[in-house]
Amino acid sequence: MIHDPEIKHFNIRIYGLVINEEKEVLLTDEFQLGQKMTKFPGGGLRFGEGPAECMMREAIEEFGQEVEIVEHFYTTDFFQKSFFFKDHQIISIYYVIRFKEPVRFRISEKPFDFPEMKNGSQSFRWKKITGLSPGDLSLPIDQHVAEMLKKRYGSSEI
Image (cartoon, rainbow, N blue to C red; front, side, top):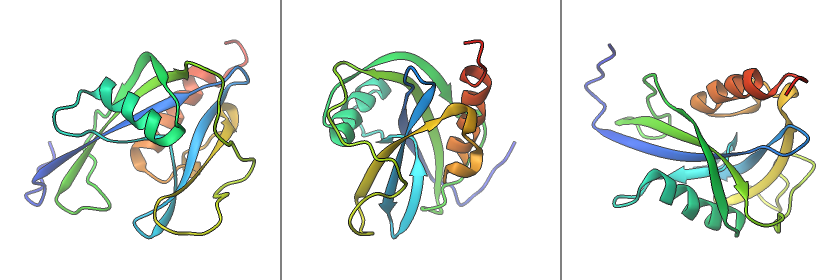
């Protein structure tokens, strides 16, 4: 068991895994907290909100359209200290989601396809699951989930 006396808070993150018919997963490239990062779409759970509610809110905020939850995919099962806040432990919950309607937002062909590197800049792109590697993602828990996705969706037998 890991005990870090600096850890005083939980930071609960909710992420959506959108997987299309071509076995590609939707990634978001963002500029946040002064740095570039690639991750799965989603964000922080607010007090008074359940994880599924958070996923629905984050979908509206990030995509501008509604999603439905297909299934729970993964919840962090190891200790992860936050890189951004020294006294926080990260717990992430991942859902497989799908859009209720055809995609209405821009999907790019290249990473970080936005006009300037300023906090809040964001773009989306598809990545083949078979070609996905942990190094494609910036956050350790996302990297773990990338490996899980490859095991589950990466074969041609699915």
